[in-house]
Amino acid sequence: MESITKNRQSPAVLRAMIERAYGADRTPTGEGWASELGHGWFNVAYRIRLRDGADVVLKIAPPAGVEVMTYERGAMSIELDTLDLLRKHTSVPVPTVDFADRSHELCDADYFFMPYVDADNLGIIADQLPAAEREAYMTQLGAANRELNSVRGPGFGPLAGPVDPSWRRVFTGMIEDVLVDGERRGVDLGWDYGTVRAVVAEHADSLDAVTEPRLVEWDLWDSNVMVRDGRIVCVIDHERAFYGDPLIEAGFTGTQLAVFGDARPFMRGYGHPELTARQRVRRRLYCLHLLLIMVIETVYRGHADTRQYDWARVQLDDVMALFGRHRR
Image 1: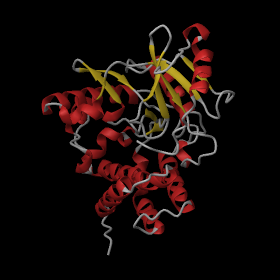
Image 2: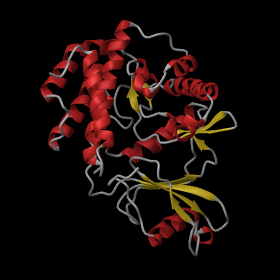
Image 3: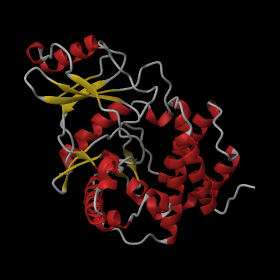
């Protein structure tokens, strides 16, 4: 996926990064030792073969001069902190970090190396799998997501703080950040920004039922799941984690919007019963938040075509309809 947030580097800079991480004796020479992993939407990632034949992955944060959405600031630090939390407190399979550099001495952004995971990306192969196999993976993902959500936080909000005891205050602030991002760049939602704010305000009391902050990934789609031989072997891309309501996780999105897929296998693995009326309202607010981001981020990432924007605008209309709002 093409995006102006992808911070590509020259072979010379890549070699310098590799040498800092692994030493001169493992730094590759010649050509053909680096290839870009192209399915990501935000960071650039390279698969690199070291001189001794080991394969690793290098992830580089966006360039310093590229404006990102408010919630994306410091995303790589969030990912590193999340990986540390998951390794310490869960058995969820996640990458180890071989080396991380936040000095900005070799390039203008944070970067880190991790071992290459020799497995299939579930999001890429899902449509090729028999339905039963695909559902089995989603059931596994539900179980893994539940374990991930078992990590308790000191309050709601960013992993690095500040945190807040009120989920209503934190989540409505998250949506407001997204709306301000959209207004700053003049993004057309197809809806008046004031109307969207009114919908959030009308239903914000549903958020008060959430009182225990849990670690949530938010971005744990099947495209961030690596599988092999019938099991999940690694969960990747943890840069959007925070302490919040587990119901905001991606696996629950299909409970309100069928276009995001059948949520039942995920919920079965998670052990979550059918949503209550109050939970459905919360989940619809989370869908609204997601679709606002999907519309607005297309401008921040400099998308050359309108496919995502056009698609997300339609889904945003559907979310607003769930709240009884219809475009004239």
